[in-house]
Image 1 (cartoon, one colour):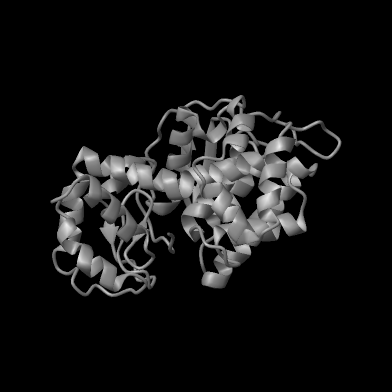
Image 2 (cartoon, one colour):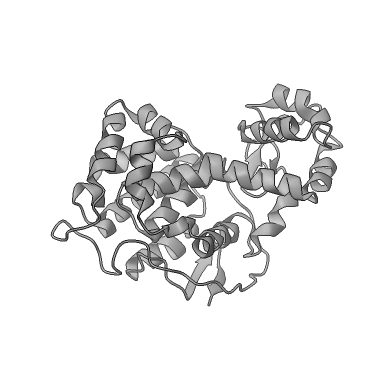
Length: 310
């Protein structure tokens, strides 16, 4: 769950290729046929009618057979391997000031944002429950690992910025465990379970292409899977109240503009002078260029640093 990121490392260009999701490069507006997601969207809408909590529960379901059947024949979009790697690079440019996203497995630091230690691939935090959940699930699969002894302390500090019971050994233990492939896989799995899969799933059902799927994912990473006005699910609900999604017959560009406006305001609510370049000179740039498929080559700026993917 996310935080204000301080930076400044050099970018490392990485070569990837992007494929087309299901929308044409041009905007899919109300006059176009758009993707045929009606059956799945009605399924989701029924849950949305129960409020933002219903939408959150739907997105995190692993056995929504009706929706899965509707989406099964669609192009993969952001969860295609190359596009998913690209998404991790884009997130890493904002979270860790590098395109080498795998270097973040061993990252651990208290960045003074009131969320305790921030660590790992997606910035799991000792104060926001996701780091505790990761270590609990990992320990269940791998008893006796180097982080298991810190579980009582992690439970005690959950929801606070306290280091009690974690210092001085926790950072070193995290870094040591992060060298193990099993813990790297555990971080990958928790990233996908809590952040990537629900965000991409909802974006597809909202009729969004690869860029829109990334916009949802990055918002989920930074703001967390909360249902309040500054959590991901709350922001999406606000956007749907304000603008029709493509699945509702609206313009994809217009809807994403609305979502990014709402997200930017939410970031400013957290901290008035926060750097919003991950939106302003990255996602908004791709949107203004009409790159709804997130095709490479890409060039963007975060915190004044320029990044390129050929």
